[in-house]
Image (cartoon, rainbow, N blue to C red; front, top):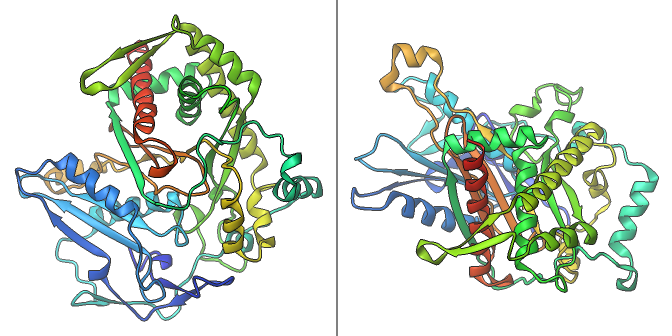
Length: 451
């Protein structure tokens, strides 16, 4: 995998400067990047997995000029026939889709490589690296990013206008930006595959997708738990991959196949839920519409009425239409096209810290990881074939980004994993857990009603 993906081979020099740069490394000590963790039969696998995931989210990468910013933790147990691989990486190296590409390629390698395969470039844990790695180009060099003057002026004005001219009621003032203490809180749950099938069917009937639905569910949860005075409106963001808009084998990079390349080719799409929409939704969220109960473990669960469900599906369908319009535009008038005008990213981030938080939640939108064994392995060598039975994605909290980061993902044919992360100090941990409990309860409700 390291030799296949050049971003796993390079360090970062001058990271604290205005102009950091990639550094070619001659070799890589894989012992610094791959860690095996054996669990005893008595250890709780799920608890250990969550603990390791949480620890990796807030991990730092030492000597980044000498070591690429990535790591794999492999959890195994003599009592089990599977491995759990936790691949973590530093965002400058790659985006979320890159993690999916990594696991897909690793799965294919396991499927096709012999057990006794030897790599001549690997000696005692030291991997010799290529002399001229083909570093993926930044997106502005891989494709044109057309920007209209009106879009540029509007975007710049939003950044530099004085506070007296800012009337955005969607700002997340209820979750102020704080740089410390920095710690990521993580809450995860799973939805069984049969219920996931029902949920996806309900999404199709209501002209939306799981991404649209997750945006709608977050809106209902926060509208029901926050007072109108502190949150009259909301804005969320959804990740959108830019790989479909990058041509294969561009003239200067004939080896580039975007959909198979680890790198940073992603943008975000904002969704505004204005005061009128949120006020109308809150008017439906009365005691008659929501029945609160106390479940085992002290979690508060709610059941959405048909009236609220209609509003939810309408919101989810609108989010899908916004995503489709973005996909039709491609890279035209995308904020990524304006990033070249930012001369000092450290200064830019410092300025963002002094402003109100813009986004209440972020949906990562990675979808399905296909790790099903091919027919040859199923028929000829089923016992030795590999498959991916569970997929999960989580991100560390981003100080200046959305308050909640919601990451749905599933392995093909498997359960749906939902991971929510947030910075510990921006609101009470119980509030975050209540929001995640809302998502779980309502997904279960939709899955059960659609059966």
